[in-house]
Image 1 (tube, rainbow over the protein chains, first blue to last red):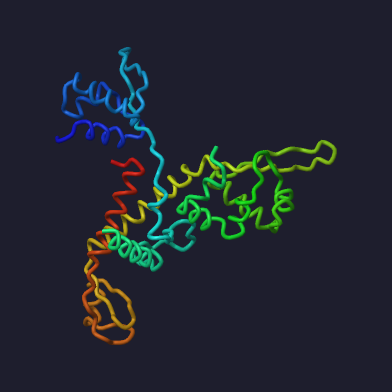
Image 2 (spheres, chains in turn orange, yellow):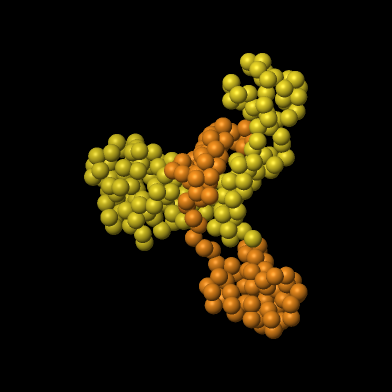
Length: 114
Length: 173
């Protein structure tokens, strides 16, 4: 495990319903004190929310990843918008010619940027 | 709330909205009066855009929660009027939802590109998978020219990079 903070974040992000702090340290394979430090770092970085939670009468925290705004630029290849947006064709993604054209554009733009 | 001008200044957001509502819809967004709520007929009158286009645009935006209405009843006539306003603040939620679908489609395409070997007819520019190419003795079923191997490495590489970027953007670990 190279970066426990990143691992912690990934684990929390993979559970949209949230993770209990009392369970996070077990899943990460670290002790609870180290887990507290990880959670503190993530909370200070604005990456997660820490919500008070009672489980079997014991106070713990529910940890939820914050949603970051998406990057709309990911829908573009150059200035071509991906054809899937607003597409009303029957979706056969393996044989989709408009998607193939977009992928060509993506490869060309990618090569130019590399 | 972001102004419509700010929203439309982002080229990707503009392209996204243009795909959804077309030229006339984008025209309506640009001319939509600031603040307040307006009926479809008021909007058509204020912007000079055809009433049917106004309605079509509003319903399309409504489906993605980018426009909302409230209904008022005229007590004398019993007629209902729908007053509309834009919800530019929902644009990133709409994009997120569409990007989840896009991610699913691109991941399926990635798997297909990874799992197959491809052959191309250099005359017709049609690409075939290995089993199909083999069944036609590596000749184009359309023009009978011999098929050549098609290297999808560059396509796959850029596709993978984009998938990774979308996954990160959506917060998928």
